[in-house]
Length: 398
Image 1: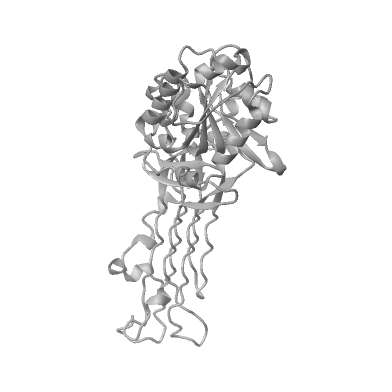
Image 2 (image 1 turned 60 degrees about the vertical axis):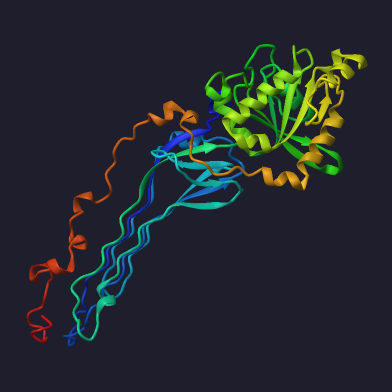
C-alpha cells in the first residue's frame, strides 16, 4: 500500500442519538369511559462505541468518514408501547488508539485490546410516558417527559502503535536494516536520511517458538521535540513500547554524545519515557576489531546495557535477542509501560487536522424542536389534548 495510507491522527465529529419523547396517550375503548393514561416511554438514543480491531493498522477509514451519527430513539405510543431504541454505531479503530476532546485537548478514553469496546458518547434516555405519573390525586396526567438531547462532540483520534521493543536512533543508524534481519518485515532501506517515512512493525522469532514485536520509528534528529524533522510526528508511538532500543552506528563521532541527544529528545517529548527500560546497540560493528570494541565500550554510559551488533553479518544478533527478551519479561519493567493519561499537547497537534472545519448538519426533525414534547405540563391547554367531551368523567378530572 502507498506510504500515505498510514494515518495516525484524525479529527472527526460524533453525535449520539437523542431520546424519544414519552406518550400522553389515554386508553379509549367502547364501554370503557375511564380507561386512564397508558402512554408508553420513548426509546433511548443510540450510543457511539469504539471497538479495537487488531487487523487495522491505520486510521485511514476515519479520515474519509468525518461525521459519525447514531440513530435517534422513537417516541412512545398508546397501550404502554415503548418507542424503539436508536441504532448504536460501532466504530472499529486500531489497538492503541487514544481519544481526546478536539476543543480542549482533554483525554477521553483509549482502546488497547482487540475486541475491547468503549462507549464514547452515550445516547439520550427516552422520556417517561404519562402512565408513570398517575396517582390517586392525579388520575389524568396530561403530560409526559421529553427525551434527553443528543451529545455532539468533536474529537481527535491519535494512534500509538503497540510493540514490545521500539527502535530509537538518528537517520541511517541501521534501524530498518536490523528489523529486516530479525523479522519478516521488509521496510525500505536506502543510504539517505529519512528513508523510513512511517513506523514499521515486525515480529521477531525467539527460542522455543516465542516471539516479540519490534517497531521501527522514523529517525529522530536534535530538536525533534520542538518540531524539527519527522520525529515529532511519530514520537508518540514510542510511548507504547515496553523497551527502548537505542541504536548508534559504530562510525559516529561520539557514541555517548549521540545517545545523550536521543535521550534528551525523548525526555523533552514526555519525561516518563526516561523511566522505560533502555538498551544501547552499537550497529555496523563489523568494521571494528576487538581492540576498537574494547576501547569504545569504555566510553559508553555505565547505566545502560550495550551490545555490539551487525545486521549484515549477524554479529551480536543472538545476544541482542537475549537481552531484549530478558528486559521484556522483567516484572519490574511492567510498571513503566503504562503512560499517565495526559491532555493532548498543543505542540504535538497536526495542524491540517485541527483546522478542518465540519459542515453543519442539523439534527433530524429540527423543525419540530418546539413540539409537544418540549412543552412543560403547566403550559398544556385543552387544545393540546383531544379530549372526549362525551366521556363520563368528573368535572375536576377534565
